[in-house]
Length: 269
Image (cartoon, rainbow, N blue to C red; front, side, top):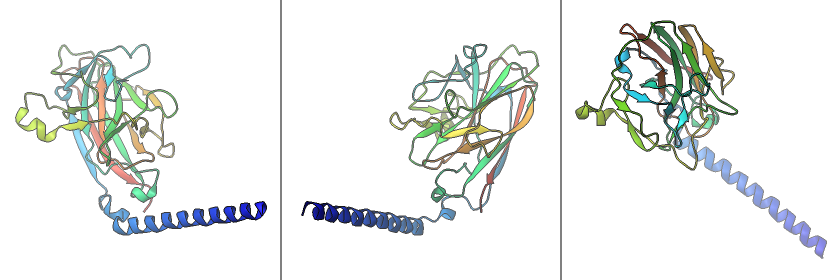
């Protein structure tokens, strides 16, 4: 009788598991019927070009960038304690998708950049809001770390117009490149509310990589004043926007320039 009871219990457990799997499949099919992937991402792949000047660096930071606990802009001993001037540029393209294909077409954002008269070192990081309301960013230490550092050879300038100290790193309003607190009439409409969820973190969901097949990327150093990198995403909810953080550790000359061309690259139809 004891063995028969165990057999019956095991059979009942199998029935329950099958029932749960069937329910999951049915729910997924219903969800996809109501939310087809083609309705979740723009039908047309987007492309956007921008040019920035030294006056667009509207934040100054001792060494940190936004996160729930401030993240370093650079970890190398020769850079990590630098004073950095920051700008945050919305790439204005279809955000990257990855991980669960049910969340939309998979793809990445390709960024082509070119500096003119860069002094010191420029650092590229990526961050942005997700559909669940919280933010994500690239990791700087440990597995999956990624960033790009470009070293220029121009002489530093004598002034920068950065008027905003980066004193808050989470739960605050962030202004895009070139906008200052003096633009009070329009700043509220264009600002981003940055909130990294303390529970889920958001660290390491977005990446900078030169090889789109290497989704998590790496930390890159170069003296080339122009090049291409990709912004990738893996897993979790989908990104709504992608902001590129560009930081420089020197005052830039008056003829500094940075051109950014971004476009979404689908990896499957």
